[in-house]
Length: 138
Image 1 (tube, one colour):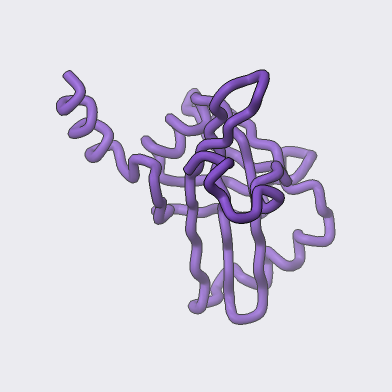
Image 2: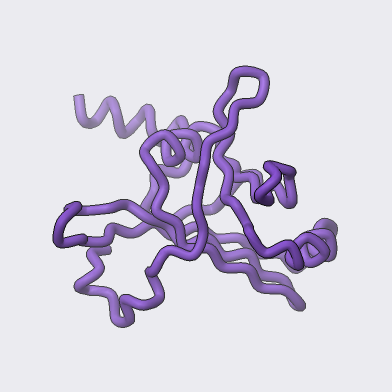
């Protein structure tokens, strides 16, 4: 969704940074959460059955840089709400497509929370869908 068609462009200002770490030679998509107080909040949602997670991709038009792909990740329970707006690089996006997961980490690169089987909107959801998409293009 281009930024000029978004009703409130301030909602799409980046709030967090993303990075790729490698564990056992495999890339892992990570969002860095700088708020040390969130650590206890993540612990409180570990076994919460009311959790809902969504990842919504969008395009943002920048005058000098052109189109930038970003996403808004939301984690919601009955008592907690986390929201991240991130503009990752292509390696991050590829890693999310193939692994279907994102780690939330702190500045010390320690794992705070792990999201698996992410429901997405506008991104290719799985490697199978990606492969089908590649066949359609070729």
